Length: 68
Image (cartoon, rainbow, N blue to C red; front, side, top):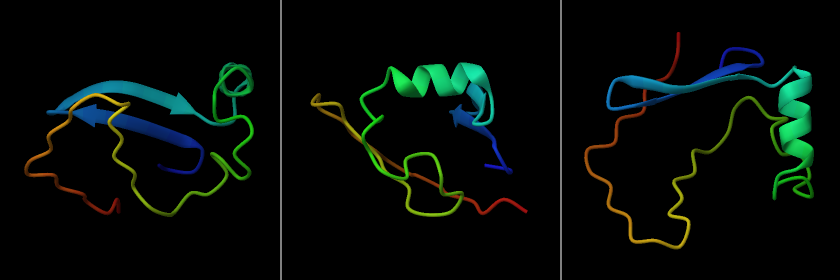
């Protein structure tokens, strides 16, 4: 995250970029399962959550770097 802008990368490939300050994000958020989560998408620092969406998942060699 850099301000309201964020990117998701997987294996060196950018798979998603987003801006939290757009009508598109606001619309998607209102339709999402997270709409009733107080404070969702409001904090710019915090915990990283790895989810499995009820399927088997394996993680190996996860690296997290602080952005400069």
